Length: 416
Image 1 (cartoon, one colour):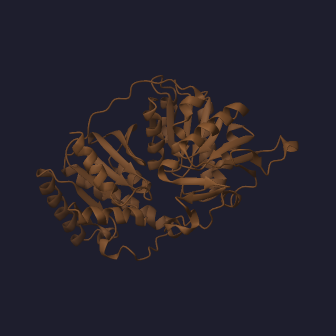
Image 2 (cartoon, one colour):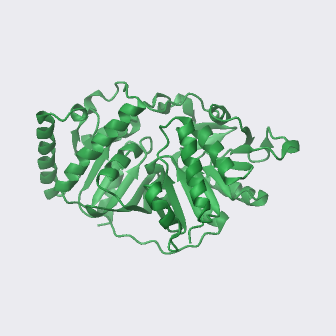
Image 3 (cartoon, one colour):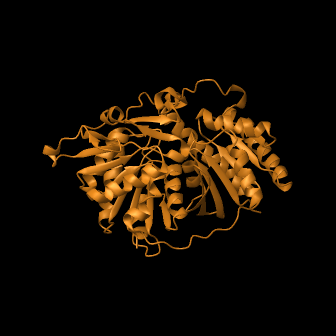
């Protein structure tokens, strides 16, 4: 029976959260369409947790909050006991608006919020978010083409979209909190720099009885089975087979550098940058050319990367707005869908949540079952679609070291 509902604002984050549960032997399923799938899956006795992608990261705050509200209302009809709001570890998205909707929808006055993901070197110190030793707003995420981060102090980021009181818990005490107004809503931001801190925060949540509604990154999800006493079961999956088709739709420079590094190390890479905005005869001819090339590479067992930007101009500034990028994601989904129709394979790897959503919509994906974590931040799942069951490897755009693609390929080879 489903006891836990996790709400994520993008698909790669939703899958990553599910993988953290799988690592603790807790079964879960990611819902792609809340309107048609939610009721039946929430009442599935074989699943302990359900993860919902509200696809709200790039919406205006009011619409994002409304999506969170709708999901919680529907979940309450199925008597879900626990709720978790999964947030991005680089603080992108509608954090304040969605956490406000979450705290009010779940009717828990105090919301513990754990923004850190220590395994990915995203840590919280005195309410500030760091990547390694660098403040978040001083990293590449300050130049994100869709969600540029302008501050590292988490209360300031939240206050852009909510008036709820924000407190900071530094590990020893909860700061800026007035005990006299215990009836007021509060979001408590927990400092965290390690897995040990996770466990201490979990103990604190249990001590104060705040476990009904919690917010934080996918990293903290691994603590939830212990806090919420979720039942465990055996999680099985087959090893990866055949060549990998990797699609990089992320505009984040981290993913682009990973593709460039893989290309320099001999992995065949095709660019779609010239052909994402048209359906001319030249474009169609180019797609057919790519399909022939991929078929030849696959016949010899080689992996292939399809990149959506130009490798030769990786440092140029993108001027995409959110609506423009959404249309590009749909176009990428259509292109990849056509490729998949003609080339049978067993493993698809996608960088970027919006790109992944576009692809899965086009191949009519019915379900996603998170299975494992290849390396930190890189999730492995099984998807069921009109092209059959295939392995899906997914990664948020800003995750991973420069050699992450090579690590993925080596993981496959080591498990054959």
